[in-house]
Image (cartoon, rainbow, N blue to C red; front, side, top):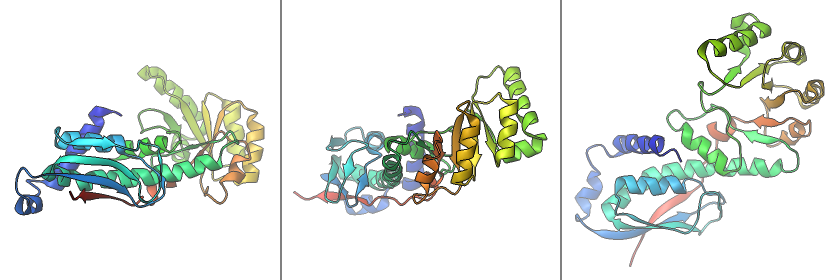
Length: 282
């Protein structure tokens, strides 16, 4: 966990949610009231966001006690209890919605990722996330992908050169784009991997002729054409497939021998898992 980044997220989220106070709790519950609550699982999948939830509780109230029963990556089913909280009721209620929002979404992402990872077992192909994430919570969503067994692609625009179709078109072609990228890295004294997207076999052939890349992204290739592309590459560069890949056809792409499959749906259209925080009455 990147504590500095995570703590900044938590503080911003609390500012958005709490404002100048949780007036409902302040109005209805006597100050100093102590209590307990449990994180109840109401769905089936992979749990994610536990470490984050602990940090949320610590930021809100260092005196809150968290009793963990399940860790990130655990397989869960309805009726499971991930953890118990005990301490100030005001603090528990302040933490409730933030930790649930985060854990539900992260668990949904981890669950979907894990389903695909299990499908790909034995193929040699790994699943990647993308930059198609929710602004402001990319770190959490990519964290959830890793918990689910997937692999993170670049985090942002700054940690990799990824030459896509628009870059190629604006720079005047594949050779120009690759050569310009190398010149830029030399001028800036930077060491970044270079990946380039190709849209058809002709563009692939041009990249193979020019060289100078680390990875080739084969975008919107049909499985049969992808297989031809993998054969032409002859293992020279890492290969990645994307575009139009679903749970129904992913094995067709994996069987073509591609190294990675990137799926934006891991983060941009996943269903959250059903979790709830319930008071423990004593």
